[in-house]
Structures are given as C-alpha cells and as structure tokens.
Length: 295
Image (cartoon, rainbow, N blue to C red; front, side, top):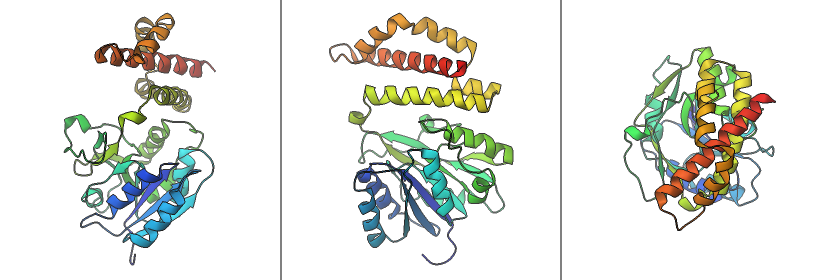
C-alpha cells in the first residue's frame, strides 16, 4: 500500500486460524477506509495461522505483516505489534471479530487533527457470523480501553511503554495501560459507528474455560491493585470490604460444590443453572482476589 499509513490494525492470535481468516476477510470489505495495514502477531500457534496469513498476503488488497511471538503473553504479543506497526493510529481488535464495512472509516473519523484520544466502539457479542444486530444501549461501555475494539495514536502507546508484560494471564492488562495513558493526557471517546461483532459460539463458552479465565482474571486483578492501589482501582476490581462481605454471604465455601453441581446439570431449569453458574464464578473470583491481595 502506497503513501502514509493512517491505521495499523494489530491482531494478536493463538490457534484460532478460522476466526483470524474471517476477521481478515472482513477487513477486505472496508468502504472509504483510510490507508491501512494489518499486523498479525502469532502468539505461539500450532495450527494453520501462518498459512492463513500467507494466503491473505496474496489475496487481500492491503499489506499484512506476520510476526511470531513465542512467549504466551497477550501484552508481549501486542507490544510486538506496536513495534512493527507503521500507522499513525493503532487499532487493536481480537482475532474472533467481524468488522462491518464502515469500521475503519468510523475509527479514522473519530480522531480529528490534533486530538489525543482512545476511541472505543460497541462490541456486540453474537453466537455466529450470520447474526448482525445494530448496536444498542446494552453495547455501551465506559471502559477507557478494551483491546477487542480500540484505536489510539502509536506515539501515545510508545510514550507510555506499551503493555505491562507482567500481566501474563487473562485480564486487566488493557485497564492498566489505560491508567498510564490517562495520566499522559489521552482522553476516552466512545464512537457508536465504530462497532464490531465478537463471535461467541455457545459451544466454546464451557464452564471449564470460564472458570479458568475467572481464576486468571482474579490473579491479575490483585496485580493491578498492587500496582495501582487507588480507590478507583479497588472499585473496578471489586476489591473492597462490602463486596467481600456480599460474596461471603451469597457464595460461601460450603455452597460452592452445590453451585458447581447445579451449573453442570442439564435437568434443572435454565434460570437456576444460570444463577448457580453466576454464583460459582463470583465466589471463585472474590476468593482468588483476596488470596492474591494477601500474598
């Protein structure tokens, strides 16, 4: 692609070749987009990710750069993407998204000349690629930065040193980066037109996967608080006395096996199964968070 690159779309991925292929194809359908490139950071894949990117290079009408980062670390992967990117703006998206034709145009137009913004857009969770509802109030987010759908200047990312790679498990690395960007003077902006679809098939949202992510998120929440011991951080992570008391009352240790059983039993009403699952995850998160803060 000739000329100045306006946006570098950075996608960190691991073992999700089919999702990545769909995300890249959605970028090929962008309308009135600024000059852009795509940087795919392979975070240790064992599947056909490299082959998907190689095919995209030959078939798709934009530059695609492939980078291999073997350390299993989302922050490290995205930092490699920042290093390689040439765009004035960097747009982070997940590998399991589909971007409507106006996605990049909306992000571009949300960054007027002279601004210093972190632009987020609606993230619409859908079970498959055929469901494409328009964004609604339920898709609004006050989060300063979520790497599923955000764009900001490459200069700002470089100025704060990128992601803290000590956040090596799931969760809070983007929130922590947002704290440093805010201190630098970057402001948050929510652009309704900059929406995308986050593909979440029910078969992949297993209790086992969700439990593991909840544990990791709690551990990283404790790390986040140790680095940012502010009231705002404690409220955001749930690390405050009233929440600990609430969880102790609603999800005591003796009830956790019962919740686990109900959450995995098909012959109970869906509402009860959903309630038990929520209580199980809540209790697990709060206990692991408390353990992390005591270490």
